[in-house]
Length: 157
Image (tube, rainbow, N blue to C red; front, top):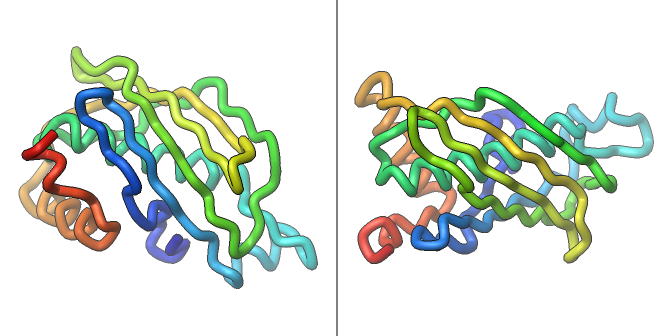
C-alpha cells in the first residue's frame, strides 16, 4: 500500500470476468505518519481507509468489466462494516463482486480479510462514465501495470 499516492491495492491476485469477481491484496506499511495519530503507540489502519481499499478493488473490477472504456466514480457507500483491526505490516486481502452494471451505475459488494479472518465489508455504488480525457485513461493503464493487473484477462477473459 502506498498511502502517499492513495494506492491501497498492491496487486490483483485474481480476476474472473465471467464471474464478475476480483481478488486483490495490499500490505500495510510498517511505518507511516498516518499511524502517529491513529493511534499513538497502537497504530491501526483507519476504517475510512479500509472502505477506500475495498472501493479501489471494486473500481478495478468495473474498469476490467468495461474493458478500460469506462471510469467508475464512487457514488454511495452502504452497509459498511468494520469487524476487526488492521495493523502495520499486515496483508489485507480484498475481494469484490459486481452485482449490477448498467444505466450508468455499478453496484459492488466487497470484503476484506487478514489471515483469513473477516475485517470489513461494504456495498458500494459507482457512477460509471466515459473517461473524461485520454490522459486519465492512459494513467489508469499505467497504474494497472504497476499493480500487476492481469491485462491479458481482458483479452482471454
